[in-house]
Image 1 (tube, protein in one colour):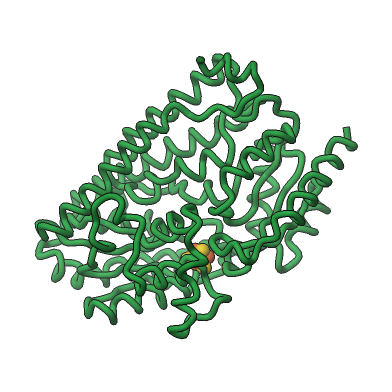
Image 2 (image 1 turned 90 degrees about the horizontal axis):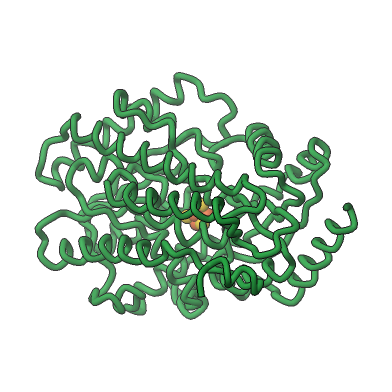
Length: 416
Ligand code: SF4
């Protein structure tokens, strides 16, 4: 049965690009596995919004523990591992990516074992940027101690309102300062042309990803948040390589095709919601079905938009990297966040906002300091707050949330 026929039966239709996504991600893990077994290339671990372009330019294979954390969450295994990290002194209140990842490591288990890995690939160096949170430094420090390998980091100022030249220069200088250690580990000299090349590739990949996300402005939307949360994999782990760009050309073409053939992500889209906060990885597919039944499409999210680094510029890789990674939503003050969100509400014709207050990720829970009320005063768009967590299902009350979401959608219907 083709996509249109399934839609006519009011069924949620999977994106056809999912096979290309699998192939792209399999290729990424195969390269990592080969490097970890043959040691023919060095492996750098990097934070999800860390300096991936610099690392790829120096020939590293790059592994992202947050991607691994999301895999543990999506596999519904995080609560099996978190207690082990807690027993080693990591609080259950800190990032559940961190606690599930470290817990799984201490139990010598990883979903990568299904792909033939003996364990997670051993790092030769760990590289972080604190633009997202302080947790990443502590998380990577655990592994630096365990493997006795070097760790280097970029410390970014937080809650930035004005992206002043001092901030950009300060962060760009830190990029320069980590290069000698990277050279020592990689065994190659930094090459400006290669860095320009990976920065340009990353820029182009981010633009393609942005174009995919922006297709959701169409009424009805051809893509929803639950698709995007899965299809963002390549931009997280392969930005700066041609692999991500090849994939997003395919996905973008599918979006265009869906719009042309009137295929929507939610068969009978009636309401359009913005998702603020982290996904609940362990409930992704059940939530997709629930919102579809409510004829509601989550058309945009802060989370998926976070990998749009379109300020990267091959002509000026250091400063543009500093700008792109400081401009990121999570690094900005609430004043800036409010402006960004207000603009997105309008662009995506949003009827309502859901804030996911994620128990273990304060930095991605933007309803803690009154932003939700100020945005409501400014836009008049109603909102709902649900409590949960990105990875730890014990923090989420499904029954309570379903009732709250259904009631919220009924209220939207009542607004006409
Ligand atoms: S931003 Fe949140 S989810 Fe991401 S690493 Fe930091 S605490 Fe964890």
